[in-house]
Length: 222
Image 1 (tube, rainbow, N blue to C red):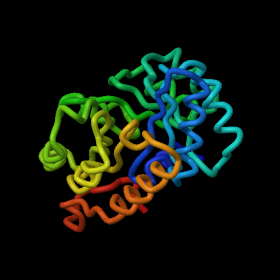
Image 2 (image 1 turned 90 degrees about the vertical axis):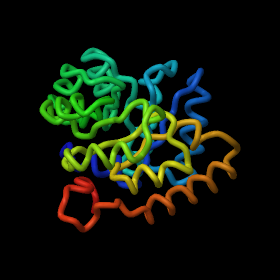
Image 3 (image 1 turned 45 degrees about the horizontal axis):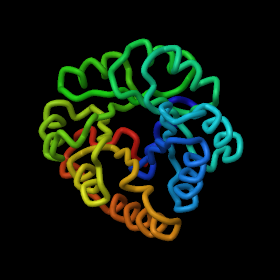
Image 4 (image 1 turned 90 degrees about the horizontal axis):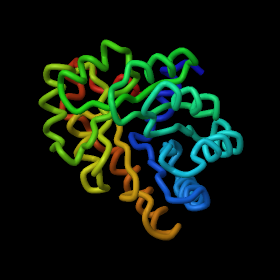
């Protein structure tokens, strides 16, 4: 698959789940719960012990049924190790040109971290496949609407502090997707399944406020 195809698949549900755990077994259980709940895109944070092993195992077992990426990718060395482990996409908390270059060298999309309009423009110049607004908790969804009035071509993905209540608001404001961790994965399997189903339905129904006005609302939409 080409980078744009992987990016589209990773963001198709308008949400990807972030797995950040204290142990490998906990991460594996969380990933299994989320996948069983219908989430098809997972980011395994490299802060999780044996995260690369988890990426390899999930990618091998799931094939094209899910898109498994690596998160908290801080440098080119981590990016290369994640790619070698089978990560289909890379997520970084910061804007690092070397991470983007490494991912692209091997055909892997990179969602680079940004928090200001200046960083957004720089990320676009570097060719980031999506721009992770981090931490989203420091912004209101209207911030995306305001920024995209000037930069409608920016594929923004809020991460950090996004909840099931605010996720549709971010999409309505113009985000192409959101990344969610414990707000999505906490609880038993039944609770997570219900929460995920409700969230996916609400995200599917969320209509970006500038849709149909000729702007680049969703570069990865169907």
